[in-house]
Length: 240
Image 1 (cartoon, rainbow, N blue to C red):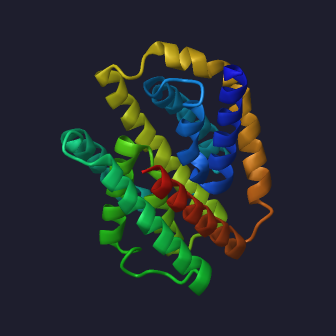
Image 2: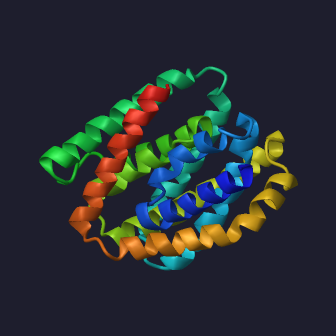
């Protein structure tokens, strides 16, 4: 049963990365925790994410916004470093509530009023803030997706550019998290050897995600992202 569960999570992660910019990733750890201890689920999830990142980056090779990534990745690193520095002082439940409320407000605005650009959010200051928040929340509560999704939605990118930029961003961020987890002893070689046999499921998930993505236009894609943000917000609020 555990093997089936891991295979399912790997497949869904592949679909999420290549089809929905990682939007479904917030549900991965809770699913693994149905059969695994929390620390093992968190540690195992990182190799799975990195494998899915590799396939997603390859699928959208050079479709990303390189100039934007130069401003996003330093912010994510800063957020990760801040998270490690203040982890003992932050209320995880309060952080989850803030992320949930932000997701719900942003998604309802997009679903009800349409995907008009938020000038402040899509500015350089918005880039630094949202990428830092993504790195910060990803390190503490494994919810780095929503801040970046909100930022890229505000930019009004096409689906390919949206997913490609998100893929490179999360790949870079997960490499930095890999270093931190390894230093702290949370992640060991055993997690990689456990995740490696499930590589085909990540590939199949990636291919299915790309299959879904090419069949939706920009307007539909952004509405789907807003709907997923609403779902993530409600889920995060209820689990906080």
